[in-house]
Image 1: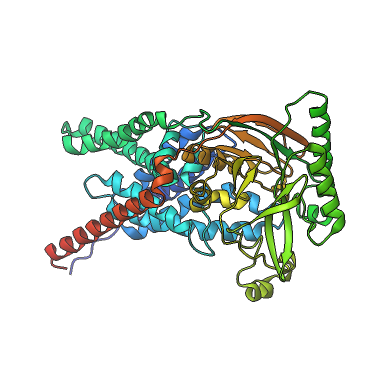
Image 2: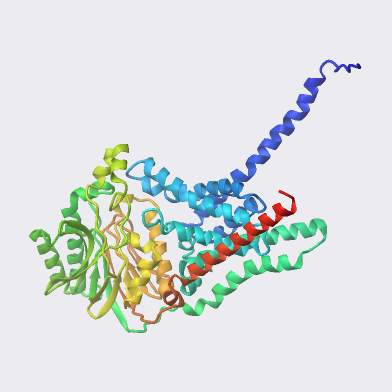
Length: 536
């Protein structure tokens, strides 16, 4: 037997050569994970209050680079990191007053939907025309997130970051699903263009079919948006109305504002009286009707004569009907309600909020949540009940559709008011519990998208700001600051025509979900055939 001796010191030299290589290999394995999280953060930066909408495209280009060619398990993990990078900063406002627990839990749960979309994107990434399948899968993930759990949470739909972008007119064609699909498709297509160009430079071989699809993935969304611009119109089809939006402000920010409910009502009545004085002095036009925000009267005016007297007086002084946001108990049930208050007749119509907010207006899994933290159950002592019918008030001859706060995030809740005859939309909201966070700007951007989607003027009366008047083309013409009292008065166009998005409703989203399902079917079939061919 021959024994070969290792020279003294040789193992150390071998280790010194292999250690850097091992460390480099470990670092290389971390690159996709870090890149996925950073691309998610880049997507967040594209959202309001910033106007960097175009950053969504490179964010999805980066996600395409991270996911393409990987297995579905890697796609699941990388998609989850992308989702956390996006949703953790986007939703930080949910923990402003209640601590980090609910914020972290919400982001962690919502990121699961992004993870599933990431797994799907990885699975279809080897198919021809993969950007199309991948973008449809992202839309399918948003569709699921808007419906489950607890009636869904659509916050952070890609469309809601595009109020200032070139793709905005697509909202009038196919609503938020088509608008979001176009942005994601453009991002994945951009990565594929760069990938194929680099490969052609290296191998001097250009796959013309794949290159054509990649280029079309970038060009068609932009061309489609430009072609849809004639649908964005702010002309008055049914005349105009002079509307007043009142922001009374609150005594202080945070959850404690509810402890001074009478002060909030008094603030809005006082601001309405101030507005009436300006009208009498000829400083502003006399409004046809007045819009107060959600929770402007948390004291039930049907059960409390003093609250009723305050609202009656405000309506008589301004000489116009007011839409009042009230918290009303009826038959033992609690409702978040808009009340149409006539200056002569008092309350004449109501709208009960239909899409109520889990953990804010009702508490799912109350016994389980109470066992974890009794403070959370004390914050929602009684669950709100849901309304069942669309809310369209006839205010001095104008049909005004009511979409209360959280409802603006849901496609169906806005569309139902327009199909029920609304000539304009009001989104009464209360953001006082979220202090000066980005929440109010994110919600304002949703209203801008809805204005274009349905070609309607949208007003946003908010207790503490930002209140605004938005034209049917998505432009903000007036807005208030945050935590200041004020009013906005403007003559706005009324419209009754419907956009393709309004007429089609859920059909564009359904079609894109079917495309996503088709892509997954093709990917699964290709995987099965590959395993059979390999004898597995």
